[in-house]
Picture (cartoon, one colour):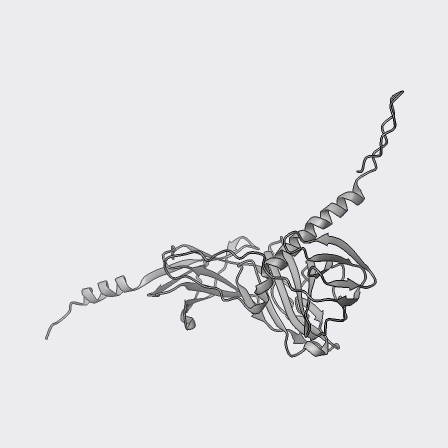
Length: 339
């Protein structure tokens, strides 16, 4: 019988196990977070595999010993909001900073609201996108009232898809929960510091022409209505702002808390160009995006175009009128300059 010395066993274990450590930092207070729960999760082809759990010490530090074969995810929860930090294979696994923020129930300001209408001969596909830009040091989280509320007709109540993308750029599926008000749904997703987008996708019956009506439930929200090239819409309170450069989609401003438009024609928006996948060596986290992200680039492009159009219109309205230059003797008068 061959006996193995205990120190050889310990040496083998030390080679197999790797140290994963770091600090949970509260960016709201600027201090390490003591007694915070931290989970270590391995991401594989079968999904997420929890490996270990611990809590931070008085200095906010945590430490794991593990032997993972794939990407890792460090997760923690603070005041009802989850936070995470990804560790790719080959990346440093020590000294990781897991950032959290204090939460507030104050409503998050919606920077922009875009409603994309894509009619076909059989159905009207709608994507409502809510854009947030949290420049503070707290997370907005209202689990009771929801982050956004939206009106959805009965015809689409069984086919609502919600995808939320936070500052980490990882799209997550969420549910639209019905409230006590008719046709009103709420979506709960914390708005962390940085940029966040919530996309709501649903479909309605359509036959090449018809109407779409909804009511806006958030005050002081910049709302834009967008249709593909070749689709005609008309209704009260619409102001055509111009086309989106890449897809030539038509962008309309909306006045008033309600929208009711007549739609004629059919059309669809797709990404004008798709970049080839990078040939990366080694395993990594591959994002499988839901159907709504077939139109992710047009939606983002449209949002940027809307912001640009808004700046142009604001400049034109705010610029002071230039006085006409005095004409020199014997010189014919010139036309007025535009501000």
